[in-house]
Image (cartoon, rainbow, N blue to C red):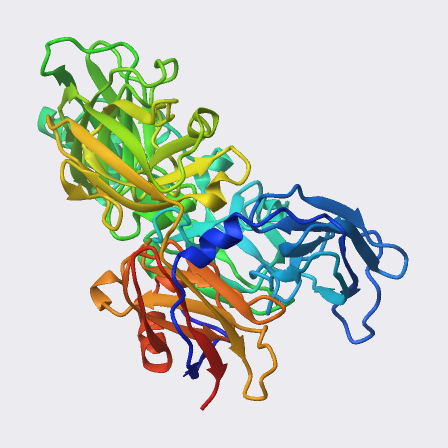
Length: 606
C-alpha cells in the first residue's frame, strides 16, 4: 500500500531504568479517586475562517473502559464541556453529518487521537477539534459499447487492513459509498476520508447477473454460419454432426456480467488504486462492464459415514493472495443448498476458488453442535466442472483459560468469549457458536472444519479487559498465540490460553528536544526479529502519546523490540513490512522481560 504524508522520525533514547511489575500492582491497588475533573474545548470547521461548529455531537470515552462514556453537544460558539470526569486517559471525538469523524489530536480525520490525561480534580481546557468535509469520487458506468448503464450498484472501497488477521483488505467507509447509478449512468460517493480506494461495480447487487439460466450464449462465427444454413434449408439442420458441434459449443461459450473494478478489469490484481487527499474531489473514475465466460460447478455429495445431512450448505469462495480483499469488497463467492445428494452453482466467472460444504453454514443448524464439512480447491476458466465432495466430521476443540496472579470471579469468567476467525473471509467469524467460557474456565467448539484460524477474545465484565491480558496459548503442545491455530482432520484439539494481570509492559514519554511533550506523533513498536513481521503479529503494536507525552503498551511477548515515532499512521498500516523496515533504521532498541514494566523515554531528533 502506498504511504502518504507519513514519515518515520528519528528518535533517541533518554536514559531510564526498568521498573518491576510491582509498580503496576501498586497502581492497581490504589484507592479509587473521585469523579471531579472536567474537559472543555471547542469544535471548529476546518476552513480558513475557523468557524465554530454548532450542534456537533462530542463523545468522551475512557480508554481503560472502567468509567461510563459521556456525550454532549456543542453550543452556538462550538464549545463543549464534560463534567464529573474521573482521573484517567480519555478519547474525545466529534461527529457531524456531512463531515468526517474527528478525534482530538489526530493528525488527519479518521485517525487515532491523542489521549487526554485527567488527574484527580483537574480541569483540562482549551481543547480544539477541527472538522473537515470528506472527499468525493464520481464517474460513469458504461457497457462494452459505451452506453450508459443505469441502476448499477457501485461500491467505493477503502484500502486498509483486517482488524482480526492483519491482512490487506477493502471496506466500505460510509453508506454514501454504495449507490446505484442514475439515468445517465453516473454515481457519486461523498464523505470519503483521505486514503487509497478501489471502485467496484457488482452486477449481482444490480440484478444484472444471476444463476446459470441467466447466462448468455456467445455465438461464434461458426454458430452464425450454421444458423444461416439452417434457415436456408427451411429449418432443418444440415447434418447431425453440426447439431452436435453446436451443442458442444454452447457448453463452453456461456458468458455473463462479472464484477468489474475501475477502469475495466475483472482481476483485482490489475485494478486501479485511487489516492484521495483531504477534501479532494475526483471525477472521471469510470467503469466499463464486461462479459466473461462462465461455468457451472456441480457434483455429488458423499459422506464418510454414509449419511448426508439435510441442513447442508455449499459455498464456492475465492482463494489466493487477494481472498481477504475480495471478501472485504463483498465478493464472498456463491452459495447453494444441495438436493438429492447433489449441488450445482452456475455463472461462476474465471478464478481460483475453494468449494466448501458444511452444516455450520446452513440456516437452522444447532448452535455449537456436531458438523460435517468438505473442501476442494478448483480453478475455473469458463468450462463446467464436476467436483464431488466427501463430507467428514468436524474436529472438536476442548479449551480452558487459566490465570496468573489475580483470579477472576465466576461472573467475570462467564463474560469471556473466544471466537475463531478464518483468514480470507473479510473479518467474518466462524459460524456455529462455541467459545463461551464457563464458570469453571472451560470452553468448547463442538465441531470445527479443518483449517487454520486466528482467534479474538472479548470481555463483557467492566474493567476485565484492562486487568487481564493474554500471555500465551498452546494447542496440542504447539504455539497458538503468535501463530494461527491449526486444526487438522481427525485430530481433536486441546487448547489452553493463559491470562496474566502482570504482563510485560513498555512505558515512557515522547518529548521534543526542548523537553516539551511531543503529542503529534504515533508510537510504533515492532519485534527486532524480522521473521515476526507477519500480518496480525502479536509483536507489532501502535499507540498515541497522551497530552503529557506519556505512552504505554502492554501485552507484548518478552523479547527485543524497536520503538519509534511516526508523523502519521493509518489503522493497520503497521502490518506493512516495508514500513517496519524504515522503523528499524530510525528507532530505539528495547528489551522486554516477562512480567516487568520497562520504561523507555524518547526524544525527537538527535
